[in-house]
Amino acid sequence: MKRWPGWMLVPAGAALAALLMWRFGAHAPPAPDPVPSDVPPPAVLAARASAVAPPSSAPARPAYLRHYDPAMELCRQPPLSAESEAALAKPGSAMERYMQVQADDLKAYVIDALLARGDDQSRVAVAMLRGDVAGVAEIARRTDDGMAYGMAWQVCQGRGAQAVMRRAAAAADAAELDAEVEQERAATASNCDALSLERWAQLQPDDAAPWLHQLDAARRANDEGAVAQALYRLGQARELRSRWPWLGGQVMAVLPDDAPLGGRMQLLTDAIGRDAALVAGLGVSAASKSCEGAALQDGNRRQQCERVAELLRGRSDRLLDRTVGARMGERLGLPPIQPDLAAIKAMQERHADRYGARLDKPTACDALRLMEEDGAEVARLGEWEALVSRFGKP
Image (cartoon, rainbow, N blue to C red; front, top):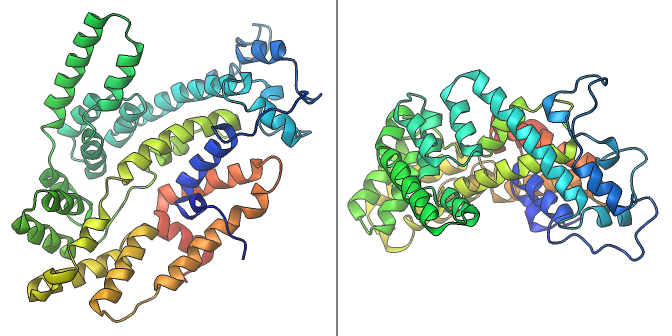
């Protein structure tokens, strides 16, 4: 079986983001010398990258296609050679600028489409795309939608740091910067401080996610009473939902079918990057560390840990959580279930091999499209059920 890089064994959305970084980021190969003949001159590329809407006599285009240029697209016929792709994809190139313009056009369309839905989950997604942490929390303060609330609580853990950093980089006047940062901090703190894990758990009582965060916080505070309470509530939960990739799924649900591939990949890379930061905070390792060593000598703790292991290995929607749960089950001496660790590993490898042949081609457009389809399925079903739907139960 062919082996693929480690990023191929992570969820489909992360694989999509990683592939984009591989093809258009720091690892892009240097441009050959001389530049291949099928690459347009730099002046032509620069003009295309800053193109304006077509003349009024031309058929009207949707707003997300106003800068569209077929000659600048990643996947076109006849395809470019690998050398030509490398020349076009260098950081700072006209191609990179063109893709960002396309992504900005699509982002404006996606925001309008999400707002038209009128529900709180869509509003939270819009605020996340805009980097408006205070706005995310304000929506959550008045919502009864558990998913919207849970996403907002997780976003708030950053306390608006990214938004503040963006403003800091853009502000030229120190006094103006100080006032803007202080305003951002005040708005974010006021709204975010009103959110709580208890309210999240109340809105989604069957979901273990808020109690997993609570367990992580209790361990960091060395609060054994809170650790025991969180483990108990975890064991009572019916499921563990990672919400991966939630924002990417919101974006994919409203992307138009004819959106240019370069722009949609750029936009999805941004959205899924925000998802990855949230999922990284879901400390499933806290459950494993709470159920090892001397702690298991206590009969009540062992019973709680057995229930948590059953939750992770049988009722979670991520491969990572199922892997941790299977290992906990082995350590606790629980009867083996399917899928066991070997079956989970085999499923990961089948997922990786799904892209292998396509990634070997000079242009990986088929793999890009396939990864977007898989990302949409993961967002709809959860990672585990998407893989079961694709490959069958291991």
